[in-house]
Image (cartoon, rainbow, N blue to C red):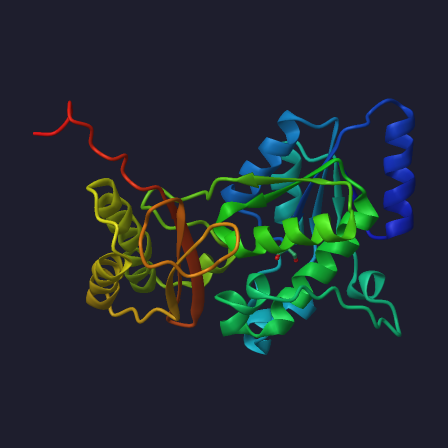
Length: 293
Ligand code: PAF
């Protein structure tokens, strides 16, 4: 496995692989501090690619809080060992100046609810500008056939899908299920900053999502009732969510009833760590005459 720092070197290595017949290039963009969630993306890429490229770049332009950027875990040697064991062929780990050369003046900006609601509303428009710009740059550098993103960042996934469609970037965007620890907490590089007590408190987030899922399975469709149930669980754990949203999965439009697929998304601070999680709700199938008790 090679670690590559420049776009020129990456392109020439990938061109050489293509010339040898390795044409399906799968790409997993990350900010490092790899955990099992990233490795599940690598495994999905490995299963359908000849060459797997993983990028490690803590992208400063998508951080809207200096403390979050400064505190973001960085561990390249450990990441390289994990990536190699999971089947990564090439790591692209550029310096900031490689992606943002002197005089850099271009921003990829998506307008509308995909970037202005939920994370965009809480973290500011600069967040998705930063994500869209760096992902566009990475896709242009790697030129992969497919790129793999986690469903935990559901809004990011929608933004990336919209961007590749709008810019005509010929990469298939693959959504992979949220990876969870045994206790249910969605895996995130930021979780290492939770104390044991905070981690316990954070478990109220997946518990709230589970409670909502179960209520929908029992036939509850009113978002007001679902929100009350989730809020009660968060409140009992001392968590005041930044948002608890029920929106359409494709356009993030708020809904009042679960009559079709609905994304339930939560963002909350636990201690100094900001966590997000979500689940897709599917309404219980209406009971037929046969199944009525
Ligand atoms: O999800 C992430 O880790 C980042 O937002 C990404 C996609 C690597 C862009 O910096």
